[in-house]
Structures are given as structure tokens and as C-alpha cells.
Length: 396
Image 1 (cartoon, rainbow, N blue to C red):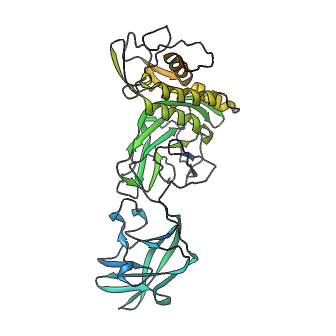
Image 2 (image 1 turned 90 degrees about the vertical axis):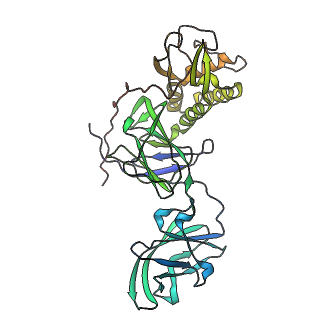
Image 3 (image 1 turned 120 degrees about the vertical axis):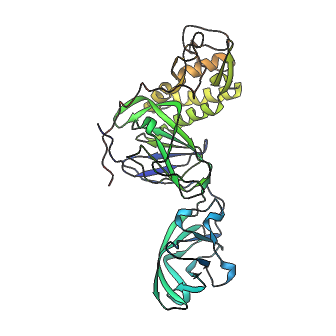
């Protein structure tokens, strides 16, 4: 079945533990902005002067030089996709109208009404950002009078610098999973940058069917960014606001966020470990007793959930790891979070394992089962392939 165009109905939900999670689905639209500084006493106005020549200055709020706007490229926090100029007006007051003037080639331009004052429905409120664009000459020669479109963008939101984002691949894009981003000091050409397979695997429903081994991909953007989207080179999501350490779900319900959080947190605590004379990187055995205790506690809480889908997901999700550490440094398999939980409990006997029998390799004790040594970055797994293509509606 061919992958079809995906609807751009999107949602973002900020989650406290690892920064933020986003839902991207076919039938839900909601949004939560990433955190910004306190702008409760600021009105931010962007100006798009595309098509104009040399600009001497842009002034917002009044004709005075003290109200000169700055280039959006002057500070990584500004959203360059909204215009070349921006002005932060420090005020806690509501304004019914806002002055707008600029100079091009030493010729004064001003808005055509009310001596340069721009009206907008609802006025200008502190804490929100606005945009003036599509500026069109109307009359005069010196000054020149113009009209423009005015937009209220929403709550003031700074660009996010150097964000790491995770993408749950619900539609089997796999190695074609890209992240495309723009609007800040960082940008990329279509289709964007190829994302890294974290070797984290989540079990979840896609539509009416539950699948094991859904891939989670990762990418760290160098620089600031205003928007991003995920794609496979032909199909794409709509524009999303970046959230540092945000996990974005596509085709998978956001209720699986706690399981994804557990996987990502586990990955962040992995590190080097030596076992039977062999050195492994990104090993589960690197976890300290405190880190292992936190993981086990989180796992047990999810395993006791009243939602059977979450119970199935946490026991069936896992990490691709070495499966025969006594004889091979290349044999791998997906090791479940349940087995990892039991293995860490045996590694640290003071931690409760809820009475489960421990069958994993821990420290220098072995059985015939699986190892808990996890190496994420060296072996790619292709076996689960593209077996869960889901029919979707075409995005126009």
C-alpha cells in the first residue's frame, strides 16, 4: 500500500519530565507553545518588508528613533520567518492602535491612516506578538503612504536553541524519517535532515492494530529554530513548534507518552560498561543504583496502570541490544523493558523487582537468557520493515 499525503492536523502537549511531547494525528488539533521568558509586559511586532530596497530604519509605536526596530537576525530568539524586522515594546498597557513607519532610500513611508497609526481587531495586548506584511504603496511621494495586512500571531514565543527532538514513527518511514526546520539561525533544505535511529522501540496501537517495535528517531538541531515538520520525502506533517527534548507522535495516541518518556530517560542514563573483558558503550549496566531505582519505580507504576494498552506497551516496549555477550559482539535483539527492569533489580538486590524471577545476565552472573548490555548506535535493525502501512486520507 502506498504512503499517501498526511493531514496536517497537529497538537503539542508540554510534558514536564523531559521537556515536551507532541501529538500529530489525523483527527485532533490542539497546541501548547514551548516555554518562553516572561513577556507579560511586552508587545512584539514583526515587519515583513520583502520586495523593498535599502531600508534605513523601521519604527514601531512612534516616529521617534527610540522606537527603531532591529533585524530579526540580530538575536537567535526572533522568528525570522515572520519578517526582517522586529520591535519589542515594553508596556503593560493595551493599545487600540500602533504606529508604523519606515524609511527606504531616505524616503519616509507611513501607514495611510491616522497619521501612521495601524488599527487591528481587538487591539494590541501585552504578551502577544503581531505581524505587519504585504506592504503596498498607496499614494504620495514624500512621505509615501502605504497599506498592509495585520495579523495577531499569538502569545510571544522565542525560538528554541539547539533542540533535540524525538519522532515516533507510526507509519513505517524508518530510514526515510527526516526533520525539516526553519525560522531561526538554523534552517535546512527539503526534505530536511535524516534522523538517527535511537534503537528505542515502543509497542502501541496504530489505528485498530497493536504493533511491537515501532521505531523512535532522534535529531539535534544546531542553532535556533522557529518551526519544524517531519516527513519521508513525499509525505509530511504540518508545521510544529519545537520543544527541546520533545517527543512527537505520528499515528500513535499521546497516551503512550509515559512509556516514551521512560524509554528516552533510560537512553539518557546509559553509558560505557565492561563485561567479561569486553567493553560496551551505551550500556544499561552503566545505570547507578539511584537511576535504576527510578527506572524500576516508573516501570512498576506503568505496569499497574488501569489502561490495558499502557500495561501492554510498557512490558512490550524495549531497546535493541547485544543478545549474546558471552560469544558475540554483533548479535542483537530487542530486549523488553520488563527484562531490563528485572535485570536491574538483580544487579542491585536492594531494589524490589515485585517478586519476579530474574533470568537476565547481571554483573558477572549469567544464565541462558538475554544480556542487559545495551549498545544503541552500532547495529541497525531492519527486520520489522514496513509491515504496518496504514491507509490515510490525502492532504491537499
